[in-house]
Length: 361
Image 1 (spheres, rainbow, N blue to C red):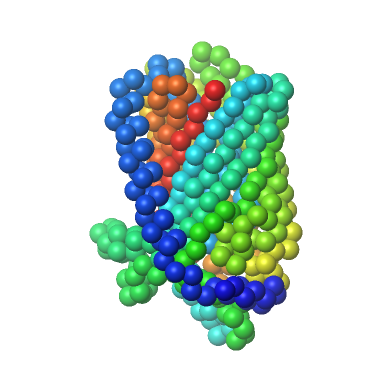
Image 2 (cartoon, rainbow, N blue to C red):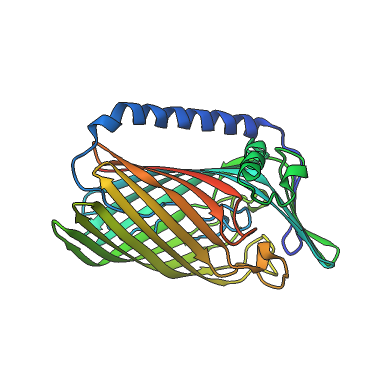
């Protein structure tokens, strides 16, 4: 049973553990499939130079990922008559707790997001696409791992080591009013996005590849906001994306970035504190020492998505650091592998694991 008061509280009641069983099965199945791909394909990697491309991921904080933040920030445009297919998976562990005399917030849980995205080149320099996500919100299994990781490297626990393990509890209160409460697992379709891109500039040679593109997206309220699978509102995003890759005897060296704006309608989550506009941006660097592998580091940031709060979880600009790389396989297959952490503490998950498999045909 779900009870919703649009301007006050999003509340969840028990729904059982089926979502969690599905969650664990999906994680193990996907990891096994990707492991087989690695074993069977890495020796036959393509001989072409490795293009440095962005991680196709974004901030998975439960109060951030519900909006239409850009995650495909690459400057590439699909050629006419061709398809680009991507399967992204993000596993994120959240824990932050803060309080003042007027506000209290606890974000404790785990999110598994799998998204299928397709783009098609409809004309020279033009492509259109769609992204369909599926989300599982639950208690997860990463709490003990994150506690041990923080202990090993002397990182602050922030109260995670003394909190109940593997639970889900997303709650926020202000001036004695419970404005958000979600404490049981659930799964389902998230907010679907429609995308388009227009190539502004491209210069390609044996020694370099430079691109500039304008990209836009429209996020529709198809996900259930009561389970934080969507915001309950429609968002529009416009961004300028650019990249430069140089090829030399040292391998491929690349830099990329994007900057844009996000316009959001009134949704169901913290409706009276939600900002209608946000600036968005990414910046990344990469090095591909061989034609089949690259290493990358990337920053994703936005301006605050909420106002009228003194808590960092709501009022601070989210900033996410992603590190990892990519493996290139025959048949135009590219596998991104990344790990992300919250550079601006409490504005993003403690840790997120990203896998992205893409191809063109």
